[in-house]
Length: 448
Ligand SMILES: Cc1cc2nc3c(=O)[nH]c(=O)nc-3n(C[C@H](O)[C@H](O)[C@H](O)COP(=O)(O)OP(=O)(O)OC[C@H]3O[C@@H](n4cnc5c(N)ncnc54)[C@H](O)[C@@H]3O)c2cc1C
Image 1 (cartoon, rainbow, N blue to C red):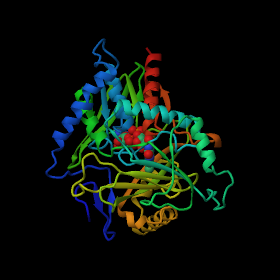
Image 2 (cartoon, protein in one colour):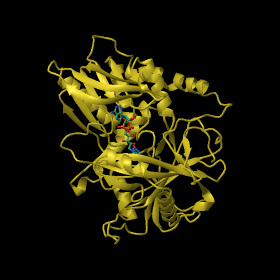
Image 3 (cartoon, rainbow, N blue to C red):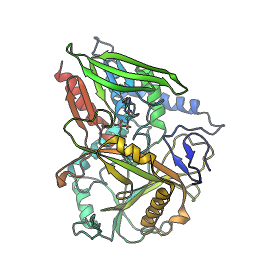
Image 4 (cartoon, rainbow, N blue to C red):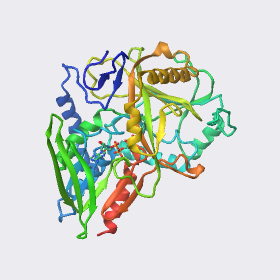
């Protein structure tokens, strides 16, 4: 096993580690506290007060419980707390960022991924700018972010080529119309690609794997947000007096005897569990049991790049960026590989079925998937094995609303629903946090 620390768990007999929600051990000579304090001085509470004004402590506002400490729960907790709302987060795990926010592809989209939806492209463009303004330190520019159109046409689910695959000139026309800037590029001597009709270099960014958790831990505490870890919410009830009862159990992992059931009342509850706990009624959803593979680069001092093949069921590789280097890996550049068809291994109509699938995945299935991923990538990147060394795999679950209309298949917005004083937020992508914030504030304003 190449890594130490709880981020990697070895799978018996497999020899290669499975990547889990990162909770990293850092290089012993690296002073994380000091480095983080410096960063926070630059981009922490001072930055928030400059961008949003000082925290408002005016008239007493309604109490708010947020369920889930991922991107959505944390972003909303920060925004509400700045406006003076007393906020408490209930998180089932022992730290923030333990769900999809801990293990995704970490791409801060500008719109190039969505040639089929003008709405999503425009939303990405806006979300990208807001994200960089609001969280300037939490993402990193890629040296090149390449979108390449495959010479092959995408295949249908029956394995046949379909005619409507977007060709290179059409792809560029679509991006031009949306005001997305790019540079035409060709294969360089350094990196050789094949089976590509044309490529563009965009300036997309990668969100750090580890830094958002550190950031929110400090900033939310600084803002006075109460965070209850190891607290799983089991029941929500709208009461006649307009309050919502939140029942939860808290536990200490070391002792079963420490499990305690509690109920507290709040004026509002915001459900930020990615539609996994109390899914929105009357909205059918799919839960994809997803696998992505982690690689490190064999090239020394490489400047991280991403490479996405379009338009169809093709692979992508993205930087997997740590701000604080995991133990023993200070010089490594990590990458995460995903594939439109292979990453969602199986799709289910409930979250618990998807979880069950992940815990029953066998070593053979993972090895088989790894071979398929690498073959698919080699079709376009023949020097794959000269560049990349396999490090492990990452499992996560993607929740998606079932969209009936084909024209809206690329919808990645937020769905917000109110049920009494419970607000459900079903997230789309990371940069749609701003849309969620608008929806929540509109609901609170309407109810005043
Ligand atoms: C494979 C994959 C790739 C992706 N790639 C990208 C990408 O490149 N770019 C992008 O923008 N988006 C991407 N996404 C989407 C993005 O990850 C999600 O939209 C986002 O992380 C969801 O954040 P969240 O806060 O809603 O949910 P989560 O991060 O899942 O947080 C939910 C939290 O709720 C907690 N919780 C659940 N039930 C309870 C309960 N009963 N009581 C208390 N706590 C509870 C969980 O422990 C968890 O911490 C990807 C997603 C996946 C799965």
